[in-house]
Length: 141
Image 1: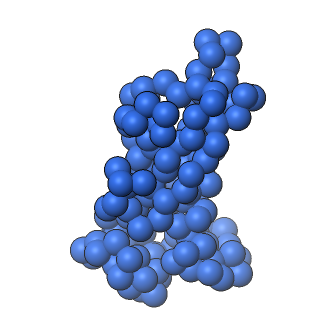
Image 2: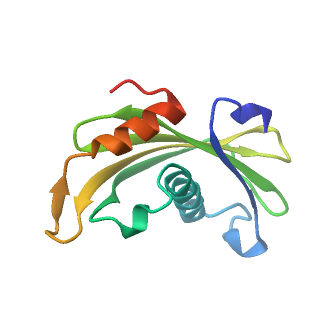
């Protein structure tokens, strides 16, 4: 996955026949699902116990720019990284490539908020999150 050499968290996701829509290319919603898979892989790498904490990451925003349509059979080469850490949010960048066509298929930008699960409200990003992310992705805080 040379195209993703700047990404510390990567995944290969096979395109399934059922991922395609009536136009014979991967449906737009599937890219969002793939983005969720790679984002969870990132969280599991950085915070193995993230799901057992009082402060948890929740999706606040995501945008996807579709560049090249993929279809079955193919493999999506996906990479994600944090590009910005703010007081109450983390910004991820995800790139998806078509292995078959060796070109970029989609670019995604995702915002994750810290959420206090017991109080049911937004929280500040814990310093330990910031430190772990900065160590992996060399992000300035």
